[in-house]
Image 1 (tube, rainbow, N blue to C red):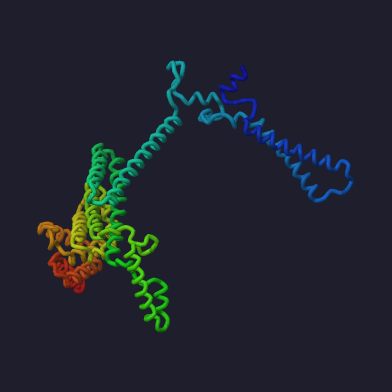
Image 2: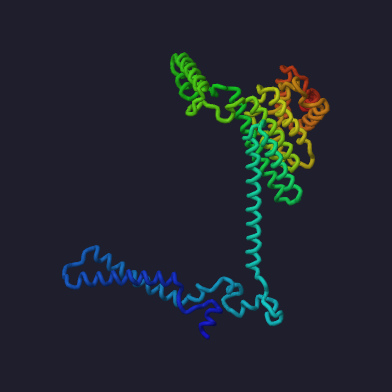
Amino acid sequence: MATDLDRSYGCTAKPSSLLNSIFMSIVNMAGKMLVSTSSSKAENTEKWKLTDHLRFMVMLISWLMLWVLRFFMDLFSCSMISPPDYHLGGSSTVRRFQLSPYSSSATGEALPSSGSSLDLILRNRVDVDGLAVKALVKALTHVLALLNEIPASSRKYQYTMAMADQIMEDNARHGHSALLHVNRLALASSFTRTSALLYRCLQVQTSPSGDYGDSWHLRAIKAIPFGSCIASYMKAITMCLNAAFSWFDTATTRFQRRDCNVEPDMMAEKLAQELLWVTNKLRCYGGVNEALVQWSLASGLASLSLNASPRVQGSVVKISAFLFRELTRKDLEIARQVKFRLLVLWTPLFCHASNGHAYPILTSFQKAEIERAMDEVISNFPAMEQELILTTWLENYAVSVSDWPNLGLAYDRWCQSTREMVHH
């Protein structure tokens, strides 16, 4: 009967196996030290050395630890082994049953779950949902990354794009916020990856020999007297070696093209079109803000786009125009710094791009719409920031052959407001 009560209330007379093992290990250690100390000095009348005193002190401390451990094992054995459910109402078992407003005899059965078990179920549900979201994000991100790797001429390219589109449409069809978040996360990752690949591909086009500026040792040589001549000779030799390595396609050379080694013009055009497709998808699924932030930080890509091929410029101009139209949305909160960086970085491309001489990039209606959007956004900036944006526009517009975008009205308005500030 006592054994049944102990099992019912979680209190046993014997300590746990872990405490038993700790107790017995200390007993054995202390016993061995006692036997070794007493037997080694029983027949020897010499004085103890320092090591003997230390060993004896360790033995005494071990026996003291045994006594303390045994005391606490006997005193707190029940509380140490009782499950946490028995302490919800305190140490008394009667108080535990007073937590429930219903009696088990009245209902005929016990309650199905307690507060702690409900929390455990909810926590497990959240964990399962989180794992499912991560799995979907990983799968969609993988499909979008494959889209960058597959050549556009492959028959599997359209299949992969259709698969990514189908996954996103199925996620949106359910209308669940977590599934829409899956689309936004995967598309934002794809936007980052595709824009980085496009930048590297345009960088290879600009410097096919891999010469991205003087290295640190060439700059150090130029600092010494007559160092410029020596550095020029070394740079010419390096360019010859790079050309030879590129000619023989040596796999071990550090100047080898890794990402755009086959027809970089076509690769850049493909990546630019994919980036335009990803941007449109971000707009559809409510993630265009992420594209705006990333596009406002792409200063290197904006610079290289000025000298890109017309077809690459066409896609990049469409992306910029698409994002500029989003700046006037009232339901979208966009930081002022993001708007400012977008206008400063990408306005020069509007001025210097080919503007559809080979094929139409933007219609006259779209150009007028973007001009109105730019004018509206510029008018909301402080006077100093308006000056920087309009000065950048005028420097590029005055030397370009294009008549778009014409921000003359915004420039005149800024001049007039500046004159009024002087009068006041």
